[in-house]
Length: 334
Image (cartoon, rainbow, N blue to C red):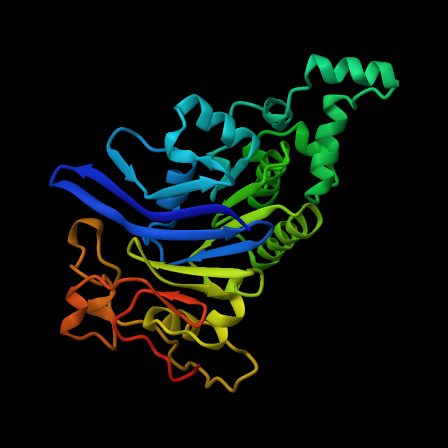
């Protein structure tokens, strides 16, 4: 059963040169209780898709979609007020660069207290009747911090964001995200600029939330290798277009799109004999800017299998469980 179902999402942004289509008919289906990796190079549009889901866009954006459902709720028909209510209760966001989203003028304690779910009067009365009082806000906050792996909660709660490491700030952000037990957490490159040990801690924490709480996670990343073993499903996006989507095993064992094959080749396999100072694999060329996008398949100028037909935008195909957008998919491995 899908928790989030998006069909043909497009985003046009008004610029000085006119409207630019930065996201072009992206479809995304996230299974309830799964970890879904959305992978692409920096500038591919992953964060734009996340902001469109959350409704965090301004008047210069034009967002259209044939379908954008969270469960049975049509997100495209919600008012701004109702969308904010959905964001608070059903969807949570973990941003990259957590210090940028924590208030530098406030200590951590009041910031977490602001996001705690409010207890209704009816629930308070029931607790009084049952003689089972609610834990104090301080105790609830302490439990949240312990849940995300922060043991020295007194020091952290009494600190300003700039006094904490990037990893601790990210754990605080995760604690704030799970305070309302959301159905979906969107993690936008949550380990950017962190050392490998801290990255591993953050990914282990997200995996634990998924396994113990059945929390669905949409994990955005530009590093295919870092999330491949964590994700149940993977969607690859390039320049605002979906190129391939499928289960983890399908994508790893039998990639069909040339961009997927290129991303897999960038993963270092230390079990193989790698020559000293050997050149690492990279896809030739650079990702184009938003106002210089090629027509048709946007990977065309960099694609090793590109032909004249690629100036026409490929229609999504369902090939043996893969959703792929390519005129010349590789099927010899299947």
